[in-house]
Amino acid sequence: MALILIIDDSPTEVHVMKTALEKHGFETAVAENGAIGIAKARDLRPDVILMDVVMPGVNGFQATRELARSPDTSDIPVIIVTTKGLQTDRIWGMRQGAVEYLVKPVTETKLVDCARAALGH
Image 1 (spheres, rainbow, N blue to C red):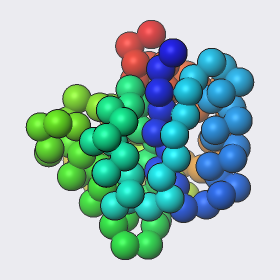
Image 2 (image 1 turned 30 degrees about the vertical axis):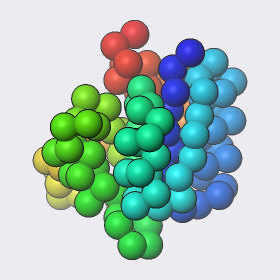
Image 3 (image 1 turned 180 degrees about the vertical axis):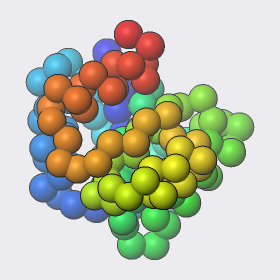
Image 4 (image 1 turned 45 degrees about the vertical axis):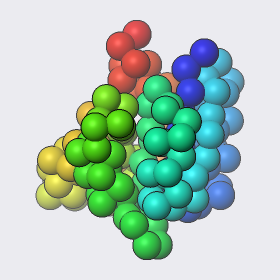
C-alpha cells in the first residue's frame, strides 16, 4: 500500500484529501507545515507528497525545492495542491521540482488519478 504524505496547514483540506485517498486504498500521513513536512518526508520516506503552498514558516515552494534538491528525498514525487492558480505560480512550482500542480478545489478523482500517475500506476 502506497504512503502519501499530505503537507497542508488547513485541517479541512487535510481531512478531505485524507478521506479521499484512504477510500482508494492509500495510507496517509500528515504534516501541518513545510518544516515538519520536510522532516517527516526524510523520516517516513513516503511514496508521494501532496504539498500546499500557502503555509506559515517554510512555504510549499520552499519545501518542494528543499525536497527536490536533497539526495535523500529527491526521488519522492511532489504534487503541489494549492489555491494559487496563476500560470506564474504553476511555472514556479514546477521549477521547484514538483511533478504536478493542482489548483484547489481538486476533485477526488483528479487527486487519486494524479497520485497514481506519480506512483507510475
